[in-house]
Length: 450
Image (cartoon, rainbow, N blue to C red; front, side, top):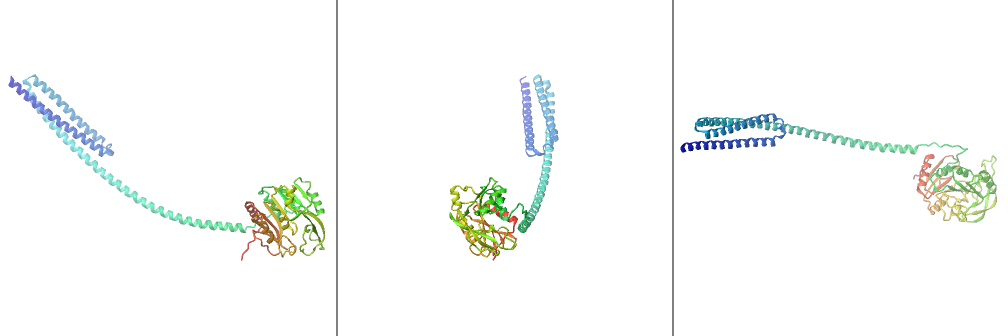
C-alpha cells in the first residue's frame, strides 16, 4: 500500500513538474507576445489602423491558445481527481498527459507560426515605412526645388518692381515739374467790373480782410473815397483822412451815412504842425487828368506835363501816434493805406511805436515824372524805414508809366525805371504768404536776373 502511494506520489510530482513547466512556457509565450505587441505599437503607430484587422486575427489565435491552455488546466485538475480517486485511473492519466503533451506541441507550433507571421508583417510594415519615407523625401526635395524656383522668380519680380518704381518716380518728378511749370505759366482770368471792382491794389486789401486780426483800417489821403467805399463794402470800419475841405465835404456826403465810416480833416505826417497843402490844376485842353484834386500834396514834387501847382492852403498835420494817444484812433487797426502824393515816408515816420499788421504806401521811381524831384516815397527810403519797424516782408505791385500791364515782386528796394505803384508791408509771415498766393493768382510775377 505504501509503495503504491509512493508510486502515485511520484506520478503527481511528475504531473506538477510538467504543469509548472507548461505554465512557465505559457508565461514566456505571453510575455513574448506582449513584447511584440508593445514594440509594434511604439514603432508603427501611424500604420496601426491599417493592421488592426490582422492584429484582431492574431489576438483571436492567442485567445484560442489561452482557451486550450485553460482546457488543459481543467484536464490536469481532472487527472488529479482521478489520481486521488484510485489507481485504476492511472492509464487514463497517462493518456491525458500524452494528450496534453501533444496539445502543448501543437500550441508551440502555432505560436511559432504566429511569431513568424507577426515577424513577416513587421518586415512588410518596415518596408512600407521605408518606401513612404523615400516618397516623402522625394516630395520634400521637389518642394524645396520649387521654393528655390519661386524664390528666384520673386527676386526677379522684386528687381522688376524696383526698376518700375524708379521709372515711376522719375515720371512722377517730371510730371510734377511739368505741373509746376504749367501753373507758373498759367494766365489766370481776372474779372473786372468798373462799377464794383477797383484797382488790383484795392482788391488785395479786400482779400486780406479774411486774414487780419482786426477789421479796422486807416485811409490816409482818402480824397473822394473810392478806396474807403470798397473797404466799407468788404466789412472794414474805416477812418479816412482828407485835409482839403472841399473834397472832405464831398467825402462826408458820399459815405458819411455809414456808421462804420469816420472822416477826419487832418493831414498826416511826421510831426504835429501846420503845413501848406499844394493844390494842382489840370491845364490840358481836354482835361485828361479827370480830377486834379487827386494830385494835391504837402510837398512840391515834379509833375507831368499838363499839371501844375497853382495855389496852396494851410492845413493841420497830425501824427498817427498822437491820434492814437488822444483816443481819436483806436489801437486795434488791422490795415493802414497811405497815398499822400509823395509824402508817404513822413506819414510812416509819424507811426511812432504803433504797429499794424499791414501797411501799404504809394511809391514812385526816381525816373517817374512825379518822382524826379521833391518826392518822399522812393522804395530805397521807405523799405529800410519799415524794416527798422520790424516789417520783414513786403510785396511791390507796380505799373510802368504809359503802360497798362500790372506785375509784382517781393522783398526788394529796387524800383523799375518809370515805375509806380503800391508797396504792402507785413509783420506776420502767414499774412504775407496769403497775399503772395493771391498776387500769384491774378498777375504775372517779375523776376530779376544778372
